[in-house]
Length: 292
Ligand code: SIN
Image (cartoon, rainbow, N blue to C red; front, side):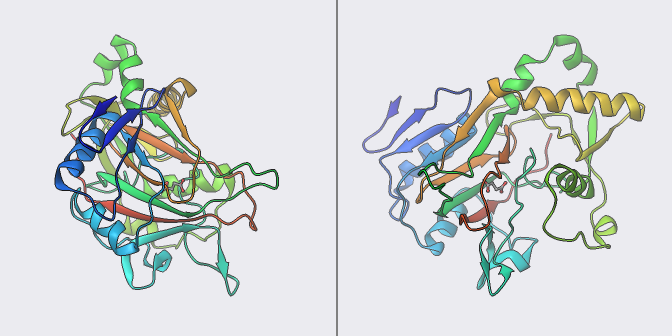
């Protein structure tokens, strides 16, 4: 455990993740923020319990990590806050107030973009609870860095320097196949979102640590490798990244703020709750850099 005056960073028992204790995000000193910033690169995922912050304070906190842009899915943003994506199963007047299917297959955010976000900051306003009091709707994180470390040397050597194509449509179709999508995929999405090529093994811009940057379904090919062989390799890498030994499973509490580093981990939102079990989260994503 590392401790400064008030803040402490307490690693989880898993291979990634840490709890940040002793901070109030409504009044965060610069030196405490620097500790959080460094810890995010080191641990890949952080959580802070018992926060009571306004949406402006959430945006201001996210902006300390980097630029914050309007979310591409404006229909699901908080009215008046184009950078705040509402992640929720709540309906008002029969209509969903946000995205109800965010993160329901393993992924790293917006990897089909030229500059995927560095991190996302998610704030729990309401969490679903079963009749027996069990909290539902956990989020599981998996360390793609630990998975890279576990890869056999000959696969690392063979695939080093190669790139995989990331397809936005591929992700949506995989999601549709896995659990059913609650919204239609607009017909023009395929043209608007061309394939994006990123390294199979991504290097963290701060720590230099390598991670596997591949998701099955979303990744559709590997340059220089025939498609049937490439798809088998993508499936193999994906299976390794999502093995339980690399997981930290977050059991939410109302008032949690969590953030994850999109270079070193993948995540999955567990959809084990019903329509009447309300889940309401606000998500702000922070600009990232071109993967290398
Ligand atoms: C996401 O992947 O952005 C959402 C994660 C969650 O709702 O748990």
